[in-house]
Length: 175
Image (cartoon, rainbow, N blue to C red; front, side, top):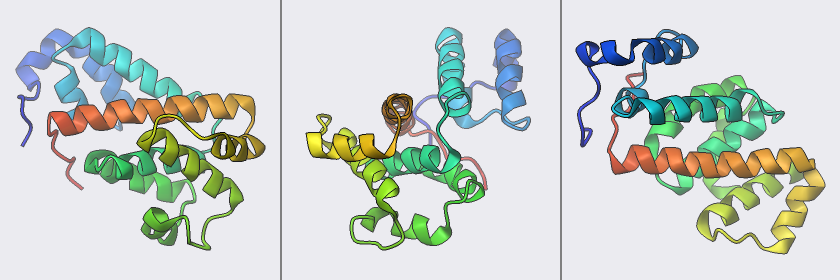
C-alpha cells in the first residue's frame, strides 16, 4: 500500500489538463506513478516530458531500451517497472526465455555480444557508478556515441523511477 494517498478524481480537477495529457499517452489510463506525482504538478509535468523524450524520442531500438529499463529495475528490486515493462519488452522482440535468463546473463548463451556489453554497462553503472574502462569500451564498440549517451541517461532515469516507486511503495498496476 502506498505511503501517501493518490490524487483522486476530485483533486485531479486542479491538474485536469496534465492528467489528460498523461492519460492520452497511456491508453486512457492514469498510472499510479502519475497519480502520486500529481501532488506536485510541476514535477509531474517535468517527469512526464523527460521520461517521454527518453523513451520515445531517442534513437535506441526497443530491445535495447527495454533491456536497460528491466535490468535496472531488477538490480534495484523494483517490481513496478518490471511489471509495467515486460509486456512492452515482449512486443519489442525480447523473448520470455531471455527475460527468464536476464539475472544470469553472464553465463547464458541467449545473449549476443551486443546484449552482454549493454548489460555489463547497466550493471556496473548501477552497482558501482564508476564504470571500468573495459566495460565502457565493450559498450562503445557496439553502440554509437549518441546511443551511449541515451543508454546512460536511460539508466539514470530508471534509477530515479525505481527509487521513487519503492520509497513511496506505489502499488503495482492491475494486470
